[in-house]
Image 1 (cartoon, rainbow, N blue to C red):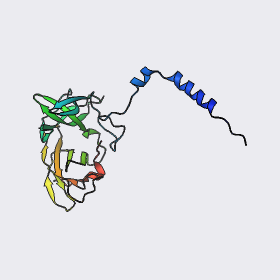
Image 2: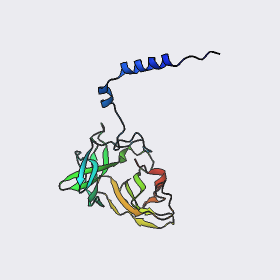
Image 3: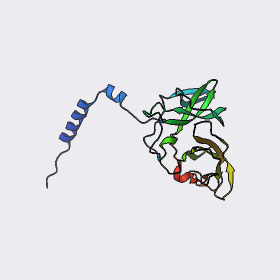
Image 4: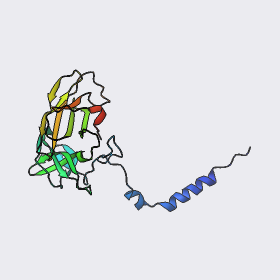
Length: 217
């Protein structure tokens, strides 16, 4: 059996590649960026405006200055990077249907610096309408952002069956929805590769496992 040489084929491939691209093409080719993941477990992952950085002391925080129209009030959500953090809703500028976007951001005077486009509640396809983001381990804690249709009281149920009300929740962030934020302690023995083994419950009887519903991108 005669073996064919590979040199002519290699030279042909090099010639074709050289004809198809230039240095300019390579510089402008689309690529993955940290704030634009290629995929996630959510089929309706929100998008964000062009990213920039906000310098806070020695830290450069990646995000974008909010340009969307606020649809309700800003809900306090503790602090992040040493400054006030809020949850708020805006009209999603990336949507042609005017969908609402629930985001997490930093309060900077009168301006908002968006750090996470978390939810698009109106696109949630589950029958109960509960939209969730987060639940992964970060600095010894886990953090959840969620939206539930209607006016409800949201609680977080641990693996032992004990419940505590979400850290903050409001019906004034997005009309028609109860938006909540919760920061909980990551317990010893929890699988650090998975999301927190907790459930989101409401006083109307709804119950959703974070590991089954939440996405984290």
